[in-house]
Image (cartoon, rainbow, N blue to C red; front, side):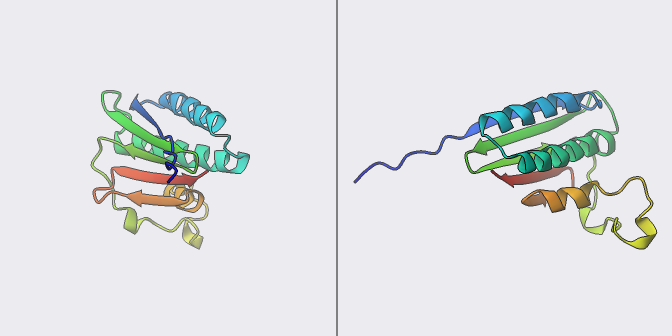
Length: 140
């Protein structure tokens, strides 16, 4: 019986201070992973959009731009998928009762589309019960 090859998995962790400039560190990691795993342009664009939105929400809404509070980004990547977990130190939010950004009364609002976009572009999106952590899966 031949041995089954073990799929290699890479793990990454970022501890980002809650300042807008931390997004650059996130984007560099996304680019590094996309290059290493030869991620297609459309999946790369979805990852960049979703993760940028999720981390920005964690920095701005979760941690209220408090640089003493961290946003933790954990990534597990193998040749078939990348799983990103974004956690902030905030109070969380009720992700089940967000206004629908496609409803006519919300169409002209400048904010409120982030979670909607994330749910549509990621292959899987799961919030923890508290609402201060989201796991996003992207098939590579």
